Length: 463
Image (cartoon, rainbow, N blue to C red; front, side, top):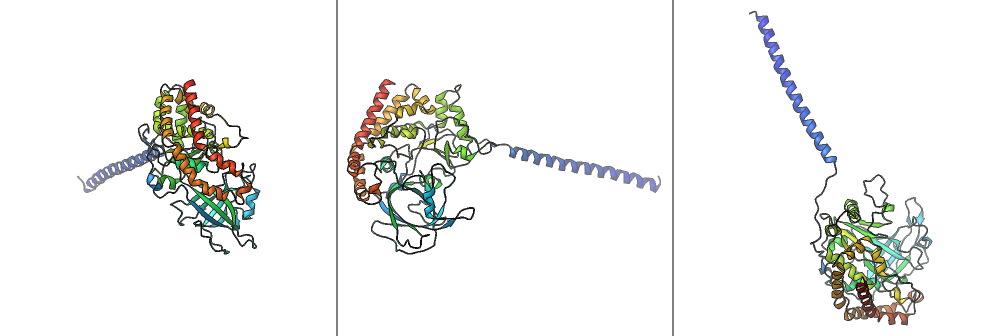
């Protein structure tokens, strides 16, 4: 064989071998690419998180935060309010708060402020400074004759008792001026529920946009109620990664505005006309819970036990019945869902309307009509044996947590503060009823709780 033929054969063999090697490499590269694409495709699909029911999981809040809590605590807060600029660059002052109105919910300016807390005997020096450590805005009813405020300390500033947000409520819709405070102080030690810390404050404000305003002006008695947020959850030993909602107009129905954040039609403002979002941005569990509750083909008890802890629910419902908190059936309460659970716990928050009976002009709603208007409550009480469970829980609370002695003890702690503050400006001109009548009514609160219990017994016997 000629050398040239041998060379040709060797070259041909090498070419075939190289072609095979190249084909194999291309195959491996393509296989790797397809595997990566599959992984990407899988990652892009929604991940279904396996969650657990809370049927047998007790809500255990950290009660040690109350170890130094004084129900009769009374502090002073001094607030310097500064001229600030809004998002459009316009200058806004403390006087702009007076322009707020019910019909204009889009105008709610936030101003820089400097906040100082002091005990009852001390007062900060009168000095003109510009050293913001907080922001201040109006909260609640914007058209009130004297506003309520939310004060938020800037990041890095130490708050009081670990709190950095202060809800300064004037409580003008509460003729007793102690409704929220009394309710939360009563339920401090209750199992299956967590309440909120409250404190009486005398609020002083100085408008530092006015050169002539050299002194702090007293705005009278306010009640601070702890802010429902991550800090609250953390301090109670609860899951700060969980979801937290405040009911605005919520009947446990899937209202049109309740959509998940990834829904193209999601509108946060529309969502918050039903439920205010305190923490969390994934509403998948909430929407599924509402679908299941309103699905008539599903067994209600199974659905209830999937999403709610019965002890927590019964305690929450009993508290509101004994206090006559009609509004809480569809507004003002909180729903908390841990991140690793499919369920929701009820947390009581707003009790402002429980003593409207003190105002002779009030037209009181019936709490049992309100219960019937809410799908969850109505369906629960229609189940055989559940009304009996509610009766047992209400009787337990009536004889202990809401006993005559406990109620009168707390009111005795509050009375000196009320007598002092309600007798001076501006509270003496803001009272909805004369001070002597207010104090007399406070002495009847334990009797009213007992009457609420008797009303429940009538409802129980007629059901």
